[in-house]
Amino acid sequence: MQGTAIAQPNIALIKYWGKRDVALNLPAVGSISITLRELHTRMQVTFDDALETDTLTVNDAPDEKMLPRLSACLDRVAGPDRHRARIASQCNFPIAAGLASSASSFAALTVAAAHAAGRSLTTAELASLAGQASGSAARSLLGGFVELANTDEGIAVDTLCEADDWPLAVVVVAITETGPKAVGSTEAMEISRKTSPFYSNWVEQQSADLDTAREAIQDRDFDKLARIAEHNCLKMHSIMWASRPPMVYWNAATMRCLETVRTLQAHDFGVFFTIDAGPQVKAVCLPEHAAEVVVRLRATDGVADIMVSGLGQGARLEAAT
Ligand code: PMV
Image (cartoon, rainbow, N blue to C red; front, top):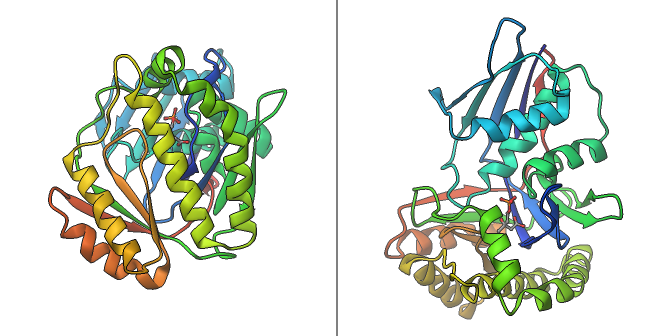
């Protein structure tokens, strides 16, 4: 009745923004991400018939706010008649700050809960369950470069390239703010879908961006991947900026980090940026250039902290319990 799983967050290079079905949490567009190695969430789920309600601790502190979303995920994995559960989450990076903590949390939760409930599920089933909790969580089930595709039935995830097959990437995360974001991504996506004049173009163009990124990954073409990833990221943020009300997740330090990356690019460093629904800048770089990228981003005014990660594997059980 207990399962413990570990999952890493992922960073989308071709982003998902917008839902085609809010109730089922199905994305409007496909996406491509890289799964990280050093950042992780460890989830332990214990079903216990002596419990009257679910309980959640995050880094050893009780958390009532997140609990309903996790309980709903457990209902989907183990059925609504399940025993109540004790959920313990440990996360080694800031939560809800645009660092994809929901991706690693719900990927780990789904895998841990399936094990605790004695269910042996396929990757497709796990992806569907994790994806209903958080759109990006399904991608954290797999390692390396991962594509999430829309299918007639829902979603499918696939590894495009294992982490070791193209160890191109070191991700340097420049943290410019550690607090939680003002508007959660689900709410923000709906505001974008309903009000942004750029939203329909975004949906139309996504398959071309996915094709380009897939080719770049197949050809191990870093420059091509860099160009399409930056373009896709700025396009997503343009939708947010043009929404009503506008949603600007960036701060002044975010902008300065982009300048730092552009300066490095002008000096032929293999690096590109991407930014999610938060103010942090993720610089994806060639391993041989990572040390310099770290030094320059650390020296950028307003950067509070730096995290460095290679590419990692997908969600997995920590131990059979
Ligand atoms: O998984 P969600 O619902 O938190 O959405 C994540 C959206 C972005 O991080 C901005 C883009 C992406 O594809 O991960």
